[in-house]
Figure: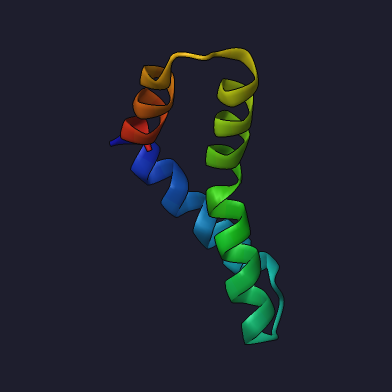
Length: 61
């Protein structure tokens, strides 16, 4: 539940930092919301060979 709230809050923050242009707001909101998942997947891929690690990361998000 905390991960979902964190992603939603990140989305809202990114949306309001996009200023007045709507297409920029949408892109910035999506980029901000998914940024942490991308970082977690990159670190897990480089450091672990067990596929269960990737499953656990995706389940948490």
